[in-house]
Length: 198
Image (cartoon, rainbow, N blue to C red):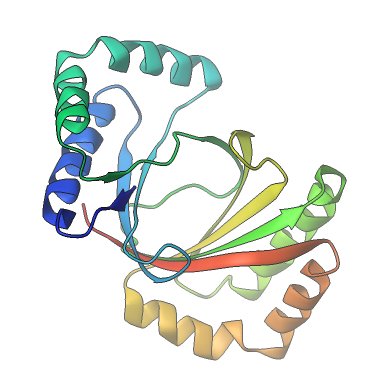
């Protein structure tokens, strides 16, 4: 969601209400604000589901939820920003960790045929970072505007930890070797840093 200038506080209040409502029908939500990179100022709302069937049931339940209906009516009457999505992603590697309050997300344009090789590189990244306090997630779209992407997210305790890991590990020869080989499988076209806002 991209807040409109002058309505950021209202947009944040509404998206937090949306997260609370969605949380009743899902396995939890995360609210992250983009603080650097693509989409600075945007707010990302993520919700988790155990299966596609669960996501489908949740979608129907949310459509009937009176609190969600009221929130959508407010949005129609007085928009506070531009909503993107929802989109549905499938996790191929890792799982969210609510203890992490900062993350770096890097998104690759990649052919589906190269996903298995990319997952091989993920195993190498996991080995390189095994002694680090980082949570690595890889996801691909199931329902989205752009389907030929692989999203990699690195979660950290806070922004200082993110910066420290980037200095020590992200710029290391071993890590950069993996990044260089990844560039042969797909094209890195956007990245962002995000912090948890509830």
